Figure 1: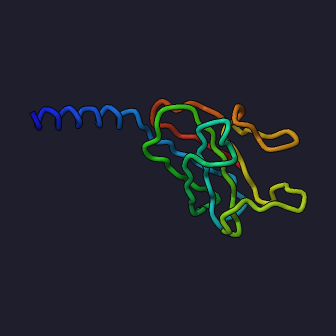
Figure 2: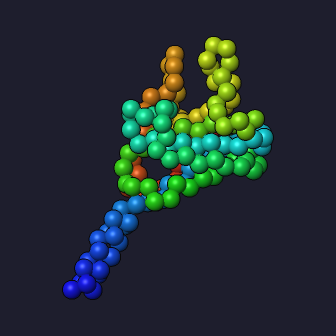
Figure 3: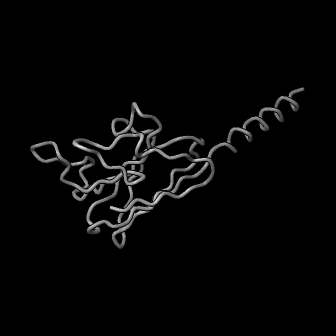
Length: 135
């Protein structure tokens, strides 16, 4: 009986893990190799640009960076990334609140009189995927 339950649990776990995918984000067009690139993955409109679902920091080589989110559930996501030139862990802003470090979003989403919105940045992930973001 214990063996049957164990096998059943392993089967269920394998089905659940099969629904997760890897999402690679390639960032290019950075103006230099100083600092790091911070990439945030968002899974809802209410958290977009506020609270990341997952985030990764990467070194920059040849004005490019690549990160991979491993084991992401299939679904809808948006990406925001910025070039943290001074490696202080935050997107620096000027006195008016406008970002002074370069940033970009998935789908090349741009804001009008404010930050980009989730509906412009969102995309679906159904299998292992790669997203290219150009600054």
